[in-house]
Amino acid sequence: MQGINRVAAISLFLLLPATFALSSSPQSGKANSPQDPLVTAIEMNFSAINLAKLAQTRTANPDVKEFADAMVKDHTRVLTQLRKESGAPDSEVRVSMPHQVAADRLSKLSGPEFDREFARQTVADYQDTVNFLEIRSMETDSDFAKTAYDLKTRAVEDLLEAENLRQTLAVGTTVPGKGNVYSDRGTAPAPPSPAAPPAAPPSSNGGGPIP
Image (cartoon, rainbow, N blue to C red; front, side, top):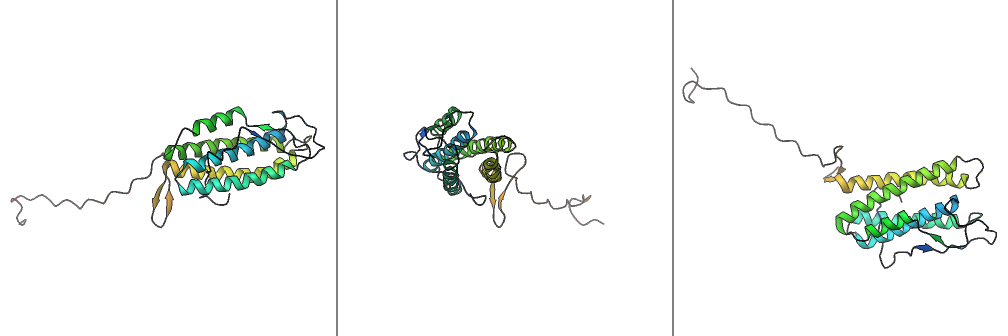
């Protein structure tokens, strides 16, 4: 994803199934378990694609569509990279229960309500991804540490872009020449009221000239 206006979406009939078949090197011997950081990273990226594809069929917002297109492109690229890692699983990687529950909940929404909830869910997922990669990148005895470190910078950028989208959908208002303006209190700022004209001095003779 490149730029704040990139936004997520794709189609429900294209929504990927709850499992993702992964081919890998014949040398792969690791179990497909939640404790395997490589499997977790694959699941996170696949779930991001799954959510973006759902968004494409639910949104009418061009910013959300652009963001979703970028999500699919970027996470597909990362998945391809992870599948080439030594020890990548050669069995199916299942979408985690929390990610599946979130996708099921969003699939029942539409319009602006979907857009807001999609952005909120994407922020939460990216925060989890950043936290996961931060921890894994500091493990000195893990083969995945360097990969986690390399992916972390991109994940932070994804999180910032998703948060920008969330704020735009939640509190943004478009101002000509200035783009989106945000309010720290959760509502779009109201325009300033025009200053009232100064009051006339009181008259002692019913409004005639003052002697």
